[in-house]
Length: 400
Image (cartoon, rainbow, N blue to C red; front, side):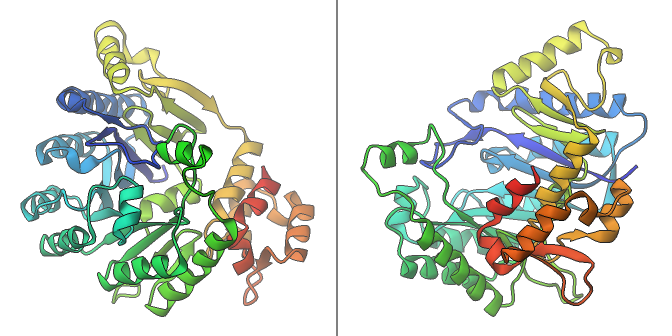
């Protein structure tokens, strides 16, 4: 069996940011013990209905704000994974956290528990942008948190930043990015702001209180980010992600997200979590209360025989992905990888047909438009051009 990844959704937050449309909730921290107990049960159930012990290469605690959890609750989840799955040596175990809420003692305990990668939601170094995004930290707290992360023994640190924020100038963006790079992270995730329905930021823009995002300016910010990051030793390996190389030469790419981009198997646990395994895509119920209730009720009333891998008692939908859909999704996700792209050999091995026979017309037209290219050295890898990275959505839609 190929190694899987595990995503653990932690939906608890202290407050909701103005741009956020994730499945998060404020003021329900009293549910944390019951929620973690339910996740541990779900982890066990899925392991029991698998026909063999599942190898796991990455675990990712996302949210929400996973760093809200006491370390002993995180330990319960990791212990449950260890008991029920085969956690590979050197597995990547990541946890998302907010700057300003992390102590050295907390981080040291996380490291001792086995977490080995921290992703900090920096978003910006500029005070007025942080206020607009409703982030509750300042730049000095970001720097302080990075110091704690390093002292606690973490050698793999990511910083998230957002560009294309209303009223943000090129100077503002360059300032944030340079300050982020000065903190010497191992990885950068740089995302263009998206106005999501139901968010405060979207409401402010629709009411004319803030300007619409400027796509041309955002594209310029993206190009500047690429130049700045690469000048400081970061290599772009995905449309929105850059990483440094270790002394050994290994790129400190996010292994968990590579599992998604390669369209490989992962299991999602928790409220609203998604999974893809056994040729099926799963989606759990959204609210933490209903999630807990589903797991508890099933424990009392049902048997394992009623479940079919990888669907859990909390699954709201389990969708079979046919070969055609898998091919399309593999193209869409794989082309996000700016260097790796789509390998002729890997595609042939996986699907039994050449990639350029399945998508001959699309590939030819996108190459002619300057959005795709075959690796000029080997002619064995199809990937986005630099222009294609900016216009990625125009490429992906051709394959779906």
